[in-house]
Image: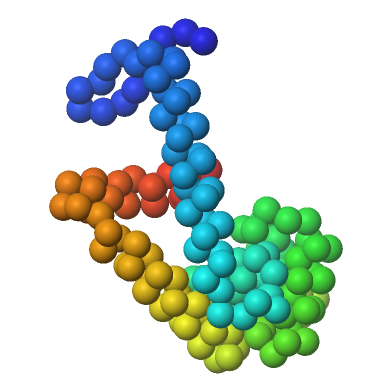
Length: 156
């Protein structure tokens, strides 16, 4: 691996091993934290994929199964099955598409929104309890890292 130029106000040449070590540590810690957050679920009967679909719907409001499949990076037939299961559980409703009657639009129900709100609340409480164990410097670093992690999460 050759020298890498990292962006930033004080662009510097980084040792490839240093970059690899930082990326590996970031990946590992984010994945462990994600798994621990997933364990704070309100409804254990839903799969992580079903929860993710509900979260996407909560964020975007409504979507066709095809749009959901793209956003969730699954095949359309898989999304059709996921939506059918969520509908059977009363967590989404299917409505006719306003412009294309061949399609349906998936909308979260009030039950789904309430469940997601409680899940978010529970996860926030859990994470807050962990964060209370940080010292001031660690808290400042976490505060600064949060928007950077969000940016990474949104990048394609």
